[in-house]
Length: 463
Image (cartoon, rainbow, N blue to C red):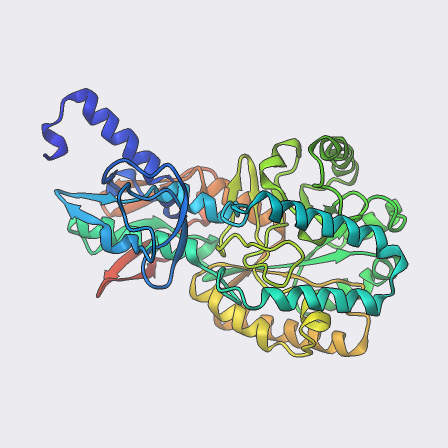
């Protein structure tokens, strides 16, 4: 039965279901909701499970009741009829499960207990260990994670793949070959570049001026994540030097002891202190030490953005990964995911002193028009060999900015743009489409086009 034959109440119910199912898709593309007409094929299973949406995209969530439990590909179970796309899963829920790493927390109580116990033990004995011993422990931990098949190493774009497949299905259902979207980045930039520096000890703090000189020489402004307590003193003169040169200050944890997210009560106590430091330093963003994270607790923070969730975390102490190369909201906080390997991991875990892995990651991120975000520590690039590699990276990024048209921005600039874009709308007029809303003077209309079952983008000129 087509929806135009349904009673008004059923029409409203169908529209509400379609809006809920297409929420993530609408947030990504910002095109008119009338292009999306989704419904569920039937009741969903009570238990969440792993499944696929095409051969290259792993998912986790509730699937159609009665669907196969093993090797299930939901894409082959989609029905397109009467202008609607009937899905065997809720894509908005599935995308949230990836971006919030719920799939990684789907573990037994024993797994959770063992992980938390080992982590507490490590930080308890850490002051008694040498740097060489800690590196060996970290290498052993990373070695066990390199055999994981999901998320996809070295860049996972499962969220982008889901959205792109859904948009192609929507165009097929509507009988159209292209739809208008609000382009992802201002002024039609192909992708976005964000450089960040985590300051972990006094030597790194004292090296920040030289690092600012390096970044400036390549036309890059970056953010510096500062630990407020215990690690080193944070004089106002140091913070002022960052501000005066156009760099950005971000709060990094409270004292970098790796215990911020151990217990909810203690986290809430620390979060209040962290929020006070954010006001004192004029910092709008946060990064957790060692990229430990619990996004479900973020509502206690008074930040505009967070930068603590890796795209893929096989080599990090906390496994998982958000499986996207795009910013996304966690409540009212914008997440700017870490989409490339950290310099410490590259140099000391993988023992690689080249930019080859970074170049591979950049290519894959740019292919998805995503955010290429880096963590480079002032503490580690003091060494001549590491400094040489960082200079090579800066040179490569300068070339990409010219050749590929990357937007190089501070985290707060990206947050402002993405927040404004989330409220923009496309309005039809006689000559095509117009973007309305705050910040729309930099926004660009683009077209998502269906070509041989695949999605390509055609970016128009800036308004």
